[in-house]
Image 1 (cartoon, rainbow, N blue to C red):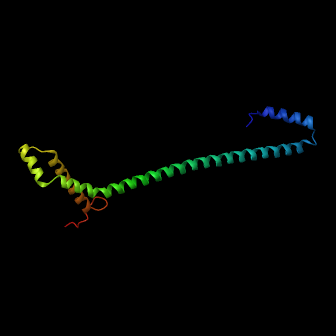
Image 2: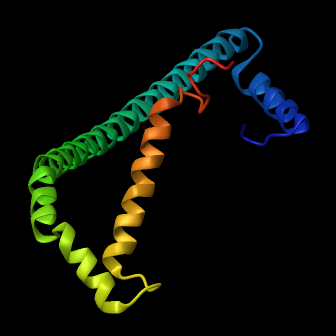
Image 3: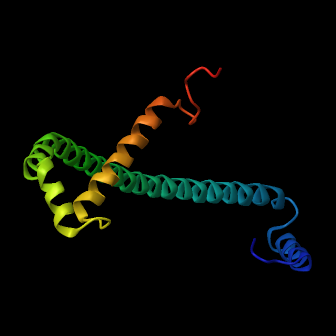
Length: 149
């Protein structure tokens, strides 16, 4: 602890024996042991108090982070709800803008065999709907829920 060698301890013991005397040496040794125990106890209490304070600070920081995460989650939920609420209106606007005859006119004007942006979008939409329908028929692990024959 104090980096004292055994020879130094023997020297301290001999000096204490000469200075204090053989009768009082055990009493002084007990008193020194009590002081050392009190000092250790005090140091342990200080360490424990420091740890408690550091944990309080860490917990306060974690609570702040938790509050920020909950606020962010609420913001995402609100945005998702507002987007989902506006989705039917957006789909109605998109359906009103693209009548079925417009696609035929675009395809006819560009010539046979060429694809336009509108026809590509409708193809992509069909593929997405088809994937959703097949996903609905499958169970939790991607297995078909229909009975095999």
